[in-house]
Every structure is written in C-alpha cells, then in structure tokens.
Length: 258
Image: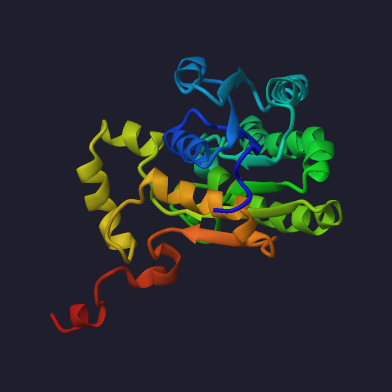
C-alpha cells in the first residue's frame, strides 16, 4: 500500500494478539512502531529492528506525554495512532461507578489524551488515527454493559475527531472486529482455537473466528494513501456478524414446522 514506507505509528495495546499482528504488518510495510502497553514482558518481546516498546498506562496523562516524547526521540516523527488498547472489565448491571470510570478511562479517554499529545506531529505529517470499535457497539449483549457502551462511544468519538481534525489534515477512522482470535478468546478457551471457531460459527456468515492478520490488513489500508479520501467511518471486519442480525446462519422458519 502506498504512503506507509518510512512512517511511524504509536500503538497502545500493541502487546495483544491483534496488536502484534498489526505491528508485524506495519513492519513489513516499512512503518516503524512504538508499542505502548502495561504488559512489559509481551511488549519487550516485540522489540526488533524498527519496533520499540514504551511501558504506558493510558490512565496516566504524564505517561502518555512521555510516550509521545519517547517516540519522537526514537523515530523522529509520528504519523499514525492505532488505539488497540482496551479494558474488558464488565459486570453488567452490577457494575460500580468505579468500574464504569475505569472502563471509560481506558477505552476512550486515554486515546483522546494521546491524540491531544500527538496532534501537532500528526498535523505536521498529515497523519491518520485508527480507533477500535467492535461488533459489541451495535447490539445488546446479555450481561455486558461497560464494554459495549464504551465501544459505541468510540464510534461517535471517531466521527467527532474526524470532523474537528480534518482542518489539520488528519484522517480518523475505526475498525470494528467481530470475534477475533485475541487474548480474551485465548484466555476464555484455554488456547482452543478450534472450539472458538465452533462457538463463533452460528454468529458469523463466514462461519469462523477472524484472524488478527485480517484486522491488521484493514488498519494498514486506513493508514495508507489508498484511504486518502476516507475519514469518519468504520470498517466492520466481522465476518458478516452485523449483516446477519438476529437470524443467525440458519433458517428459522423450518423450526416452526418441526
């Protein structure tokens, strides 16, 4: 894709499975990456030629400021922000005020503070921001409140950022993955990808869980010159999840005739 070679990306949440796939894709495209995460072991493991790690807690403005300074010092510029980091904290209807604030702080506010800290550089380089929404932003999910609400807010944030940053030449878009082989899926199934695909199949037209590399491809496209006239929108990398709606991947009418 055009317009990626020699650019620099900051990626909060880069130590996750999806984050690591994006790092690899960026590196292959000639983009240097500053991974920002609270997981030092996983973050340091990604360090390589053109990839650095800076431990960062998105709840801390000073750490975010240090991240931007460290990236500028290490790589000399900032072109892209890819906001993968998120909190899965969610006790649904029982969620406390502190839990709500924690979820919103990590999933939304941290990325806004990062944008503010990096805005001058992004404007200088006519950069791009890619936020992470989710299929959860568009449907109600039993027992889940914090994560879906924060993801829905991210899509509105994306539109507002695109509106107000357009004058700076900064494009802002989002990707919304469906079920993807990610850290949370790995943890919930004890590393059983086959089980994850089997459970995901009825909810996705393509009958499986997405691969992190498929999400990474959408991110690279949105950062590239090929997406130069795209801003304020959301790409659903969801295997047909949101197209399906409540019908599932099976006919319902025959059930009435059983």
